[in-house]
Image 1 (spheres, helix red, strand yellow):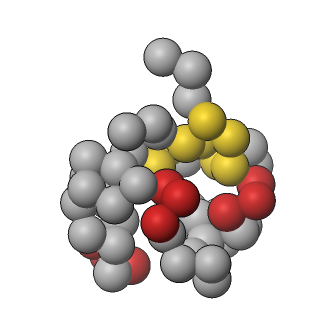
Image 2 (cartoon, rainbow, N blue to C red; image 1 turned 30 degrees about the vertical axis):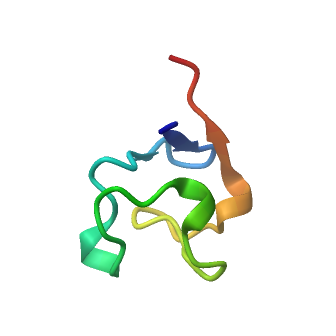
Length: 54
């Protein structure tokens, strides 16, 4: 699963870890995040994330 980076603050969403503090279980792909999910660091929407090239 691909990681995604916030283009505003640089926080990385890692699907293997999820975002348990905000109710997202480990193993959740970025595409399956709720539409109202926001960056836990700066609060921007999913539209402000870009795939991380590995």
